[in-house]
Amino acid sequence: MGSPSNQQVSAIAPASTRSPVQAQERDRALSRWRRRWNGLSLLWRVFAVNAAVFVIATAILAWTPVTVHRIATPRELVILSIGLVLMLAFDLILLRRAFGPLRRLAMTMGAVDPAQPGRRAESLEGAGAEVLALASALNAMLDRLEGERRESGRRVLAAQERERTRIARELHDEVGQTLTAIALRAQRAARRAESTDEALADIADTALRSLEDVRRIGRELRPEALDDLGLVNALIALCARVDRQRGLRVSRDLDWHLPELSPEVELVIYRAAQEALTNVLRHANATKVLVTLKSRDRQVVLSVSDDGSGMRNGAGEGGLRGMQERAMVIGAELEIRPGARRGTEIVLRVPISGESWAPR
Image (cartoon, rainbow, N blue to C red; front, side, top):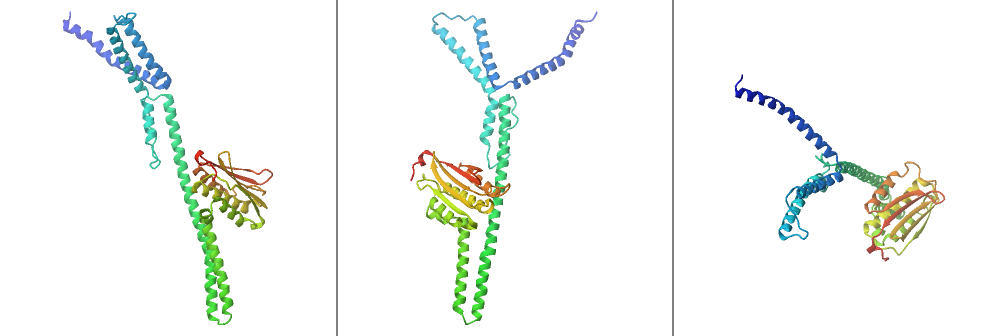
């Protein structure tokens, strides 16, 4: 018969061998519980937290030797107040834990800086299904915004390079050749003593044409009439320049009583009209075009409609994209649609705030 110490060791040994197995089972059960909890939506988490608080409060009232008279005594009121405070504090702690992932997601959204791309909502441990869906939607939105910003930057750079190329080509082909012609004629006039007056007059005419080319290029870069005379007069001057070119007849219907517009809005409206008329000249094969500018329903509406063959696929795509980007900058809406009978109509709707709605 063994000694008592040996019996105790034999009795304790099975328990020690079972403890790691029990610990693993306990860990697996805890892991399953956490997965179920993480799979719950935020609604059910809040419900579970409040239900746990109410159950605990009910158990305390049922199993503690605390009695409350029909009219509570001061001592009972103190006990009930302490219980209420403890219950609310416990509820706050549990709710703070349940809403923790949502708070971390809100901090991530507030920390997003457009100047420092790449920040995303990280994996939110313990977050519910709604918070995970919101984080995924936020990351997808940031991806789209950063992609659009990069694409917009590329388009801006490409537009700047196209504009520089156009200006350089016009300066070389028109102004440069004209100035070269002036220099050659001046050299010939210097060699010949006769007919000097006629040669000088010819040189003067050529110089004036060159000056007009420089002014035209300057107007295309920045319309002087828009700064000096206002939007309506600038549109009148624009229509007058385009009128009769390539057999195109330009009509206009412009409202003189427009609400006060910022310089940025006036420039976008003018550029939209300029680009629309340029597209009509180049691509529409039209004979008539109507330019209207009206103020109605708290909007300033620009419309350019022609009787041409319509926009062909890819025709004027760069200019139309430029108009859309300018419209987005001022919060305007650009619509390109078929004309009432034929051709194309381009409509720009600029919303006007209440303070600016009063006509001039």
